[in-house]
Amino acid sequence: MAAVWQAGGMVDRLTVTGLQWRASLDPAENLAALASCQARADLVVLPEAFARDFGPVTEPLGPHAEDQGGRFDAAVSDLAARARGTVVAGMFETSGDPGRPFNTLLVRGAATAAYRKIHLYDSFGYKESERLTPGPWEPLVVDVQGWKVGLMTCYDLRFPELGRALADRGAEVIVVPAAWLRGRTPEEHSRKLNAWERLASARAIENVAYVVAVGQPGPDGYTGHSMVLDPYGEPVVEAGGRAAEISATLDRAVLDEARATNPSLDNRVKRDR
Image 1 (cartoon, rainbow, N blue to C red):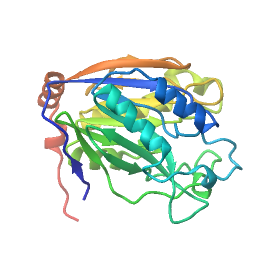
Image 2 (image 1 turned 90 degrees about the vertical axis):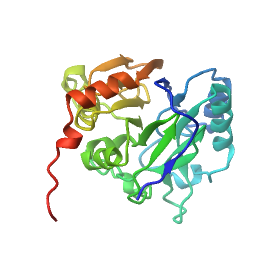
Image 3 (image 1 turned 180 degrees about the vertical axis):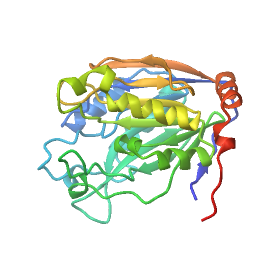
Image 4 (image 1 turned 45 degrees about the vertical axis):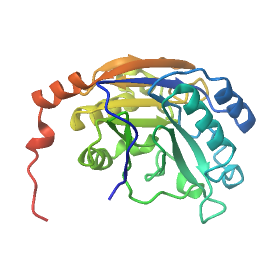
C-alpha cells in the first residue's frame, strides 16, 4: 500500500516548472546548477539522475551514490525553499549492494518523500540491472497543495500497470523525470514516432490525469522533448531537444471536466481473481 504524504491546503490551480537540464558527470556542476536556480512554482521537476549522469554503460554507479540527507539532498531542499514549493529530482542512492545503488527520485519541500525506480531498463541492448538495484513495488503518491501527485521514473512509463496503481491511489498528476534515449534510427528520432511522447500521452489518457514528463536534453543521446500533458493527452506546453525550461498551470476545473466527460476510471469492470 503506497503512502500518501500531506502538504498544505488545496489549490484550484497548481503551477509547475520543468527544468530540461543536462546532468554533468561532475556532481559539483549539478550542485552549482541547483544553487543558481531561481525557479518559482508549486512543483519544480528536474530529470532522472540529475545528481550525476549515468556515464558510460561499463562504468559502475556505486561510487557515485549518496545517502538521503547528503549534499544533493540538501541542495534540492534549498531549491524547494527558494521555490516555495516542492522539488522532484533524481539521484543514485546507496542500497544494500555497494555496486548497485537505487535510482531514486527525491521529493523535497512542501512534500517530503523518495521514490526508488521499480522498472530497470533491461531493453534495447542495455542492462540497467547490472548497475542498479530495483526499488520495491511501492507506488508513491504525494500531496502537493491538495493535488495528488504520482511518481514514475523513465522506463516506468512503459508499464501501464504502474500508472493505474497510481490512479487507484488517487493520482491526479503523474510526474515522470527521465533520461530517455533517442530512437535507434533517424526515423525513430522524429516527433511522429517518438515513443516517449506516445507513452506519456497514453498514461495521461488512460488515467485521465495530467502528466509532467521532464527529460534530459540532447544532443548526446537523450531525447529531451519535456512536456506537460492535459488529462486528454494533449500538450499544454512542450520543449524541443535542447536545454530548456517549461512552465504550466494545472487547472482542477479541466481535470474535473475531463473525468466527468470520460469517466473511464469509474467504468472499469472489476474481474474476479
